[in-house]
Length: 233
Image (cartoon, rainbow, N blue to C red; front, side, top):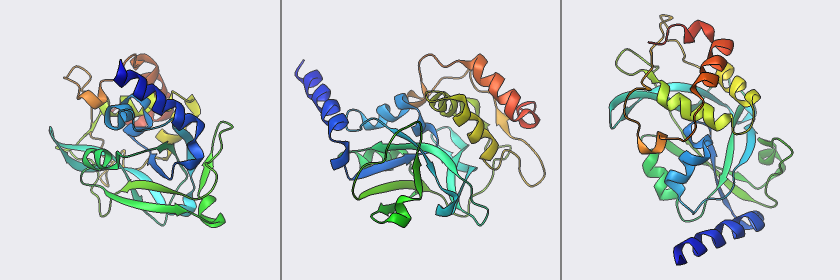
């Protein structure tokens, strides 16, 4: 009971005092899902703010091959690019748990954008009538460099994609559509698609999300990127 009260108190303080929190993580993949964030941040995170990271920041979201506990898999990464795009995601306030996220995002490089002037503040636009925190704050972003696209031994996995789309759908379908249309590396340079439907396999705890609407997700995939979705195996 004491633990519950302590956690509840923290959540209330976070909600009321968001402006005093100085550190935020920009979630653009599985961290968009509130349940997945809570798995890592526990009760040391606050309510996320849906935002767009401007293309002026110089990044593109893409599928990249990385090592995982199940071997190589493709995950999302942000990489510097001359063909940068706007990137939908969330700003998640954090307290005392950045190390937990560093461990989760092993293999990525965490960079920090200091929101302490008008130019940098314009890099992030809040959505759905939300507001950015007042004053200066830090935005931590997990990035990649010199990445490799998916391949036969390093596919995109449907479980992971389900978590991401379920997270976007916590806001609206427009978020999901924008993500699918503006994410790179659905195909490699040989125009091949490496996308595995692993929904029947055992889920990782951080991907075990309740009430995922697979039927809706498949419908959105078919409507948005049918040329790739039809090649899922």
